[in-house]
Image (cartoon, rainbow, N blue to C red; front, top):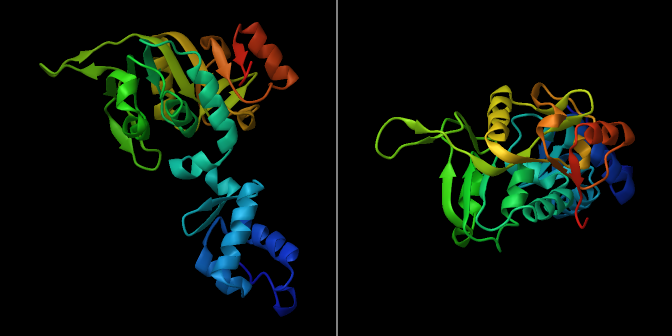
Length: 272
């Protein structure tokens, strides 16, 4: 049980309260506004303002009705809405940069993940695209004017991630067989980018699916913000050499930059 974080003398010290509030959320993992207001002896509106500020400062993740600690948000089963709030500006810039790689009329595979979803949101001016994805949210948010055709890969649904895992193929409308597919580009959002271990993710089923998406595409762009640099997650997807581009928001550190150069992976930065 999380201990009561304040006493009466500290309730009127906003800086102290916010510091203790951050520590409280970190210890608890996930909390509600109502519970915090009771624990801190202040109004719910005060707690909401504090949480909004701490979210803006990157200390925690603001959610509907409460907050979640950063380390809790990194769990594999964290909802996509929460993940979208993490490094949101960086993901938006990555999405814009990745969209610039796509010509009108291209066939594109896009995987699940909040960074891939940022790409989808920057396709509004594109036309005549054929898109295949396992990203359930992307299938709902894509502008109909963008697509010639939109396909959703079938399989098991992971509700928290709003994604499917299954074969990278599409069923025939005339029978039970599946069609093999090819794409001009694959845009793959990953959770880790390491000089030693390549690209990785938390989900072993998705790792295999992501690798197959890459193998079925002429060009591969991996999407990852700078917080993914140096991370090695549970399931390796592919080695660095499997990608043509790493679309990110900041220059990689020296060791990773050298490994990417040796693997002939072009680092694409927003505005470059």
